[in-house]
Amino acid sequence: MTLRKLAPKRPSTRVRNLAATVLWLLVCTGCAVQEASHAATSKAVTPGKQVAWPSAELVDSLRASPERWSALRATCDRNLDYTPHPVADFTPPPHYVDRAGEQRIAKSLGDDGHTAYREALCFALSGDRRYAQTSERILDAWAAGVQHIDRGQGAADFNFTFPEYVLAAAMLRADSQWHDATFKSFLRERVLPLSVASRSNNFGNWGVLLEASSAAYLNDRRLMEQAISRWRALMLSQVSSDGSMAAEICRSNTTDWCGGPDKGVNGLAYTHYTLLPTTLAAEVLRNEGFNVYASNAGQQLALAYARAAGWTLHPETFPYYASNGGHLNGVRNAAYFRILQRRVPRTDGGVAIHQGNLGMDGYEIALLYGEVQ
Image (tube, rainbow, N blue to C red; front, side, top):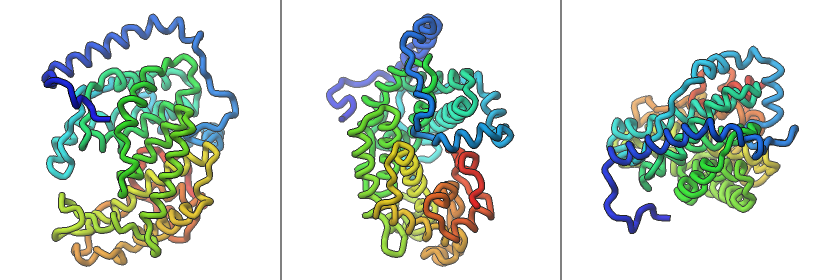
């Protein structure tokens, strides 16, 4: 789908932002009126039903040990009055061309997504509707407030970030008082058409996570089968016989993606950035009854994990370590190791986990999966 392809010249950003704000205020003003009708459209999740994320097993474990998530709950309590900041015209400049400019537009998408996700997780763990209401307010604000998403960097940022929103929505299904029709429509009509699952590098893996989480939340079997098929195809095509990912290990820190004087300086970081959504998608699929770990593609993921874990422990063995003067970016951006160590355990992965300091944990993996023995 090409957004606004035949449309006349769009109004100015200021006008669109004002319109989005007015629309969002109208939506929120109507919340009190809608409250009385919520019970009539109850759609609570059946008790005991496996949900997309997190698994019932992980939720039960944390509920049994409230002290383990007390810090998260304190964060959720502080954010109960959180104000979302949807961006009407989501058109950030390319990341490697104007990083500061991209952040000025994309930061609120990330900040709001993190907050919505954590509030939804607190709701899943406690059943306290105050957390659900905060998360729902954020999701509804973005669904009502975004008027345009650029098909370049904007689409990329939505693929990289919006799975948090979708998994938050999946956790909120237990709240029978949330009218999620607006969010569902936004997801189906505006976000999913921007999926980059067809891409061959890390973009594709993030697109698969977006599709898998959306399929689980929307109960869309066709989309789920599509995500499973693409997940397998990517693992079979991306992972070499030695476990490396050729399209990622060469990554530089410039628009000369796999070249220039710093070729490979981001290679390990991008390896992690590819395996994170791959692993999260595998967990969503597993929770929905599709164990992709047991497939040939799952064996390729295990191979990639072993290679990534070895490089994380011994970055000096990474192919571009020496050529970058002994420096690599994002060496320990590997919180997802805790998931893979439960599914396809590897010695180096276990050592890296026990060393601690594994970053890129916006999905609260360390809390959910704990220390792996």
